[in-house]
Length: 182
Image (cartoon, rainbow, N blue to C red; front, side, top):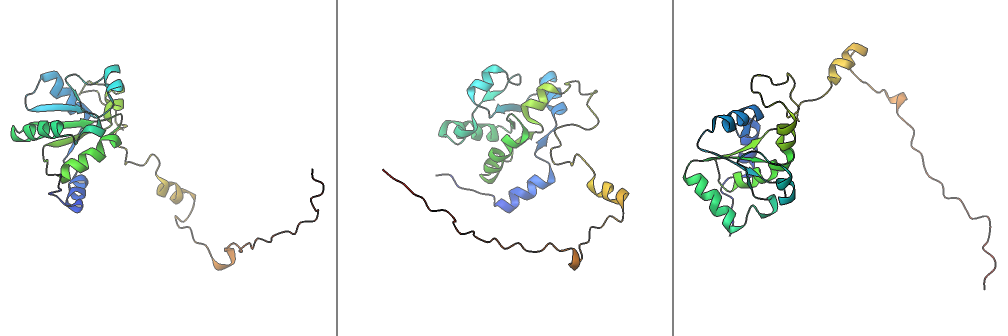
């Protein structure tokens, strides 16, 4: 019964534009100011939700997101122009459900960067955020190109004489014979 109205390429283009991502400090401000027109959906399992969740979040586990009653709820949010913020333990847990719902035509979805783990361990003061936030999971931790530049020419060339020689495995013949028996 479910059909995609957006191609995978169009959904990936939307992902590359980063328009459907929400920074934790923005969500903290929305919750603190009680801004209307936003709802937060926790995609974790009910046990993790009971242990702790973002204030005002609704628990819809990712494995039941496409149930009829949950799709009806998402349709109502879309009809009422309510922005839906999806989150899981980390940002990656919400990316899959976001992609599926985006392809189904839901344009009112955002993914919380860093997920619940970052939101609860990071500072919630929107004026005191770290300089290099942990939720930018696609940012490299080290500048490998810069390290290579410091160490030499920055190029790694392998000449033909440095090519490793192929090792051909040789099967050994059995030297002893099994003796004995019952």
